Length: 119
Length: 160
View 1 (tube, each protein chain N blue to C red):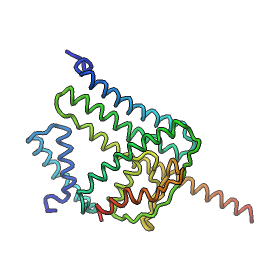
View 2 (cartoon, each protein chain N blue to C red):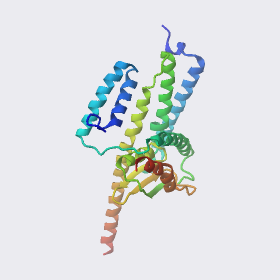
View 3 (cartoon, rainbow over the protein chains, first blue to last red):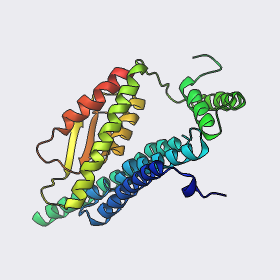
View 4 (cartoon, chains in turn green, orange):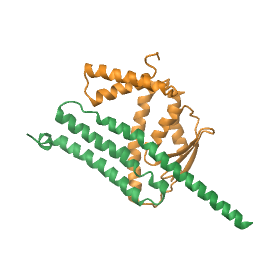
């Protein structure tokens, strides 16, 4: 039995590899950003690279590979992209609002203490 | 629509998903249609507000624009992360939205959150004000104008 790699025409293999590298690269840059960006609000932007461009690259690579290997259109991976896209905002908004709430209550506590000390 | 198809869009989406997950055949079309109709009825038991796109033919154009913008901002944000913090000004933007349809607002939130570089933080329904965080406010980019013209405008045309 041939392996996937042997059954694949070289041009398609190159295309799939390029898409995988782009997708994985964007996800990696997003992860680096999550580690390196200085503030919380900046850090929540970084993983979005993985959920948008990263997912798109890897999902497209998978669609091309299995469409060519199976000889028919394999597009159910689109569902992965769709569901990743519509579920990310839930987590991000939850985190963003929690951070905003914390910042506002801390700022208020700070202001209250300053006011008490001024009296 | 009718008594048997209270949520036609949901039913159509479930059928499409069923066909993608299995394979395109008459048998799966019938089975998927059955699941879709049951899902529509189950959904109406929850009594969600109805989704009524008025100009649905504008949706593909908006989808293409969003995909293009997401691709572009992926590259922009990747560049900003690799370059480090210099010359980048992160910050909040407050935007007064005229859009009121909850479903359209949900789509706008998904667009802005899926777009690297912008994050939907808080929306106040009473005043219609949205608090957006941008990874780079630099160069005097008019974020409020971009959001209103590129996404809110088309969504209002589609839904209101």
